[in-house]
Each structure stands twice: as C-alpha cells, then as structure tokens.
Amino acid sequence: MALHPDFPSSPYAILNPDIRWFPADEALRESGMDKLMPPLVAVLRKKVKEFRDSGYAGASATSKSLLNWWFKEPHLLPRFDGATEEFRYFFAQREALETIVYLYDVVHAKDKFDLMRFDSSGMVSAQLFDETWRRYVIKMATGSGKTKVMSLALAWSFFHKTYEADSTLARNFLVIAPNIIVLDRIYKDFQGLRIFFQDPVIPDNGFDGRNWRDDFQLTLHVQDQVRVTHSTGNIFLTNIHRVYAGEDIPPSPDDDNTMDYFLGKRPSGATTDSKVDLGMIVRDIDELMVLNDEAHHIHDAGLAWFQSIQDIHNRLLQKGGALSLQLDVTATPKHNNGAIFVQTVADYPLVEAIWQNVVKHPVLPDAASRTKLVERQSAKYTEKYADYIDLGVIEWRKAYAEHQKLGKKAILFVMTDDTRNCDDVAEYLEGHYPELKDAVLVIHTKNNGEISEAASGKAKEELEALRKQSNQIDDVPPARTRRSCRC
Image (cartoon, rainbow, N blue to C red; front, side, top):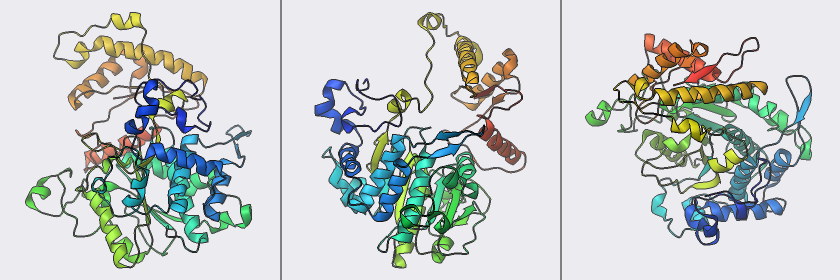
C-alpha cells in the first residue's frame, strides 16, 4: 500500500488522479483502484481535473471568479514579525471546492440520482442514500484544513446566490459541530468573520468588477443567541446537542439519556439548557445551507441529527423552497458497519496528508527500544504498561526539543480503555516526570467517543475548564514553554 513513486511531497502540488494513493498494492492500480475507493471519487477526480484544465469551463461567472481568486491569484499576508509571506491553499482544499462547484454548476447534481452517474463500483443504488436533498461529503484527514474548506464553501454559496440570478444556493448557513470543544474551535475562526478576511477568502473590491467585501454582509449567531433580524446573511453556529427542529423529532437510542426513547417522550438531548429551535429559524428564512463539521456522526437516518436536517428540508419544501445544500466534512465518513458514505465526492486520505507533512507523523521507537518492552502481570494499568508509558515519554522529549526549535509544541497523547485507567496514567505521569506536573489534561469520553455535555454545578465548572484547556493545549507561552500531555 505504498504511495506511487511520483507522488509529490508538497501539499500544494496539483495531484494527478493516476498517482493518488489507494489501499492496495501498486500492481492492482489499473484493475482494482476504482473498487477500493469511495465509489464516486475515482471518476470525479478525473472529471474535476478536466474541469480545472479547461479553465473552469461551464462554471458560472461568480464561481469562476472565486476559484481564480483563491487558487490562481498570488496572496501575500502579514506575518507576526511584520514581514509578509505567500499564502496558498493546499491542493486538497482546492480539489474539494473545485468538486463542489463542478457538481453544482456544471453537472447540476441536485440529488442522489445525479451523483450515482459517477459510480465506478457498479454497486451504488438509490437505497444507499437516506436523504432526498443535495448532499456532498468531503473526506479530509484530520488537520488538513476542513474549516478552511467550510469557509470557502460558505462564501461561494453566499456570492453565488447574490450575483447569479438563477442560483438555488443560500445566504443563510447552519454550521453544526458535534460537541462544544469543536464548536469553540470553529467559533474562534468565525468570530468577527475573522477567517474570511484573515485568509484570502473574500476577493478585493473591484476584482472582476464586483464589490465583494462590501457585499459580504453576515451576522454570526452562536448557540442560543439566535435572533433572526434579517431574512438573509445569517450564520447559525451551534452544536448538535442544542438542535431540534420542532416537537415532531422522535427520541433516538443514541441520546445520552435513553429513558425518553423507551418511554416515548420527546428527547431533551445531552443538555438541560435551552435549545435552538430550527423550526423557528426556518419560519423566518427562505434559504438555508447546512455545513456539518466532523460529519461522521450522521451515520444513521434514525438519529435526531439527521432527522432535524430532514425536518428543515421538509419545512422549506412547504414554503416552496428546499435545503440548498448539505455539505459534510469529516476524516472518517463511515457508518457503524464500516461502509463509507456513498455521498463522498472528494477524498484526501491520511496517508497522503502524512507524506506531505500536512498532519503529524506517527513516531515509532527504534527496534532496540521496542525489544526491551515488557508487559507486566498486574491489575494496575500503570504497572502493567509502565515500560510503554516510559518509552512514550522518552520519544516525546525528543520530539519536544525538535518542535521547540520551530516555535511549535509537541504533545504526548495517551489513550486508555476506561476512565479509571485514564486517571491512573495522569497521576503516574505527573508523579514520575517533573516537567509534566500540573501539565496533564484529562479528557473522559463516552463509549462512542463523545464528551458528555450534561453539566450542572461543579460538573459544569469542570466542563468549562476543559473547554478552555483543550483550546489552549497547542499554545506556546512566550515567556515559559509549558509542556503538555493529554490523556
């Protein structure tokens, strides 16, 4: 499963579909690649390459202007030291946007039947799609810039609807995060519309004859602070635990508290706080695009998340409209049974991201060190795996020194099988290594990997502290570098 010998190391290099990674031996590329990838991706990569090489033939004037601005115009941005440096989007980010534009502008892919035209496996059927509206899924390795893709897609939709007379896109956006920690990270970028102007998302006024910056008028609404004062130009940013679309959403077995599911009451979700009534929002607006971050959580049509989006679409249909687009971004677009979302239209796998230094490299200790590892007979987790933990710290110290030279911070990540063992490891690290004293962040998750948001009293204070610590874990204080570990 090695990369093609011609695969480039630069994340900015335009990737030819013929050299992309796939999970098999290189000898099977011709005969098996189409069957081993997400079923729509192999054909779409080739079609999008033709679209790119043609100068975006068939795209609307607005789309063409934006694609040229983002990916062909030079961008010099100020650095922290007062100098400037060139900014470029990764090719994975570019390909994602080009694919979205190609599907909407050129192919006019509005539903599952239009997407099925790109199936290379011969196994995709209409029954594999749960939704009846336009839905595209972007698969990108964690850390490769999914938020940037979301910002570009949002701006594209806004300007397309503003400038193109026949556009069916939207200038209102529901941005959904799977939990409050992800939401905080998105909010950090979206607050004050920062990402749209710090990155070259919005073209300069006058570019291709448009006043882009003057026309980009949006209001950000966060969590329960939703006040629809304008029928267009709204970003509703919330986490899924606060979303419901009206009284008709049934309980789900995936709810934190399954009592409502078995007793038949309407679910309160994972928090007792007030919620964002999407039914109210939809009554006040006629156009909406949904963007889902970490969208692998929408793995079942029976989940309240999916049903909330379905309800929004149905309400818009009753008003003579429709959900303009559901854009899902995730590193793992898979159902519980391991099957990939058939709506996946672009794929930047982890293997490629690692090779191009877009994400962190896994570090494997040398063979001599590994042969000395002994798993001891003990019921206590840190006694049983002491050798493994100690070797992890040794490797982390090496990485820490190298990262420090670059002004970056190396983090030791330890994952255990239950919360009791997690606490045991945290206590061991802080007790055995002085540099990790008061520098270990402990995160307890549920069985499905989610962090519970049901919080009150002391638990609420701890949750707020966790939010702050998790958002600051990568920060490097200017005066003193604090080392960090996350358990």
